[in-house]
Length: 227
Image (cartoon, rainbow, N blue to C red; front, top):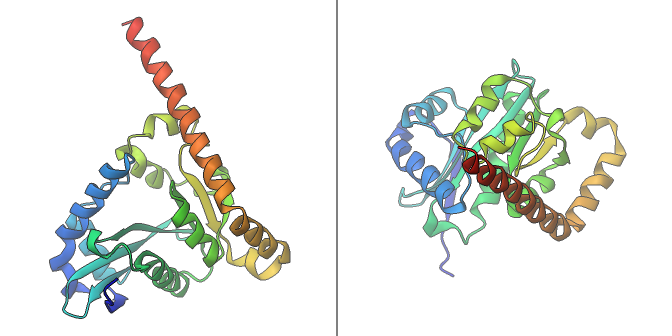
C-alpha cells in the first residue's frame, strides 16, 4: 500500500470549497450501504466550518480525504459526531479511526460535560467507538430532542424506527458518558467485554437487521394485498 500522509485539522471557512464534494460523497456512501443518514446541504456543512465544529482530513497536496462534524442536542446535554466520511480512494489507510479520534477530542473540548452518542450499523465504527469509551445502550438513553430524530427521516429505515416508537431500529446506539467514565470502574470492564465480543455482536446486529427487514417486508406485502 502506498504511504500517504494526512493532516487532520479543525475545519475552517477556507475549507468551504470542499463542502459539495463532502455532501455528495455522504449521499453516495449511504446509497452504497443501503442505509440512510440525515441528508445535509453544502450550506449546512459550511456552517459547521464557520462554527469550528468539524474536522477535515487532507493529503499533503491539499486533496480532500475525510470529514466529520459535531451536532449538539438537548441544549448541549448530548453531542453527536455525525457525517463521518472518507473519500473512497483513502479508505484503506485507517483514516476513519483517526478522524473519529480528532472529532472526539474536539467534542470533549467544546462540550466537556456532554454525553457523546452515535447510531451506527457498522461493526468497524462500533469498534472505533468502543476504543474511545463508548458502550452500547438502549435508544432510551439517547437524546429525546425531536430535531435529532427528524434527521432520520431521510433514512430508508425510518419506517422501522417509527414503528418501534423510536426505541429500536437497525442501528446500534452507543454512548460515551463522562460522568460514568470518572465514577464507575465497571464501565471499563463493560467496554473491554464488548471489544472482545465485537464479532459476536456484529453477528447479532446482522441478525437484527434480517429480522427487522423481514418483518417490514411482510407488512408491506400485507398492505399491498388489501389496497
